[in-house]
Image 1 (cartoon, rainbow, N blue to C red):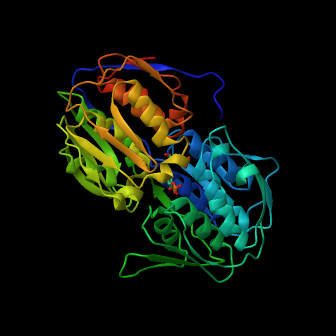
Image 2: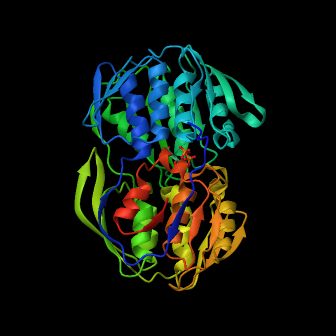
Length: 446
Ligand SMILES: O=C(O)C1=C[C@@H](OP(=O)(O)O)[C@@H](O)[C@H](O)C1
Ligand SMILES: C=C(OP(=O)(O)O)C(=O)O
């Protein structure tokens, strides 16, 4: 899935955006729906699946390990599962492309099956830390041969039966939590994960929906203990994947920043463990009105009516970070246009995403005229108060979809054109992004 030729694009100052778009399916939920369906006994159906490269990497891996996965002309996906414990030895390496979620969750699945698998990834994924999952999975009995620094490419030899563990997460990470819970699915006894700060809870919701015995206990200080009873039998499900709030973030911020805009971004999942950005933007003065609030696939969903707003800088409370961990690059752009100072701290995890999102955003924002101070764990941004940024520069996406889309939005509120050196990574999470933005009236030069 590496893209041989970069695909640059330029974004220009735009008159008011208008119209209605529907965002593609949630990436986190899409990955999990394929994995759990592939482990159920029988046939599951998934509607609204994100057909982005990251999720397709998960589908290919589950096929390589024995599941039958097909898609019909109406984009409904059918998955015939192999049953928990039934994963087969893949014949070739599992290619994870750019996807941390695929890699870390699948390592968990393989860890408690008696199979050996090799995981490879692109240049970005090969720099990301994997010890956060290989450490606890080793405690469960899996064996790993990694590249230097505990990174990809790596080989895992699973153990069956694996050993159940009680594990306190050293970093706030839904991927680590999920890897251990998924390993626990095929492990006799009870596997427990303890998290001090709540992270996205899609795994817990979906495991319960598929019939696994999973409990969540919350202490008085908010610490959660998630316990899964292993050797579960999962029942096939009909799943409707809600739209991705992390993808919606880009058109929403564009609608807030471009003067004269009024848009509707439809089908936005608003699970409280994901919706932190919308809380922060409202605290900055954003007009984001939920319409037709409903439930889709067991998750709260609404259409968001967004109108141009003058934003004010705030101190973002660090405790909200896990519920918007992927949304900081676009929040940095909003802060660069706000009145006054925005302080964002507690973001050290951003340094180990598809790129170092603190350093890369600081550099690109400065190149287009924003006032940014980089801290070890965040950024302080002094905004323009609604005046356009200078623009007139080319910024590097560093194989990071969220960096590419953030600077695309910045281009819409800059005097000079903003060129992104490579928009190809956007296909990992938001296929059709540039077309959707153009449909809203954005000036896109391919
Ligand atoms: O569990 C998931 O689906 C995800 C968890 C987050 O990663 P971490 O667990 O590393 O914080 C997030 O950044 C990623 O995009 C998706
Ligand atoms: C961090 C992200 O994804 P992943 O970890 O799956 O690569 C993301 O989508 O912003």
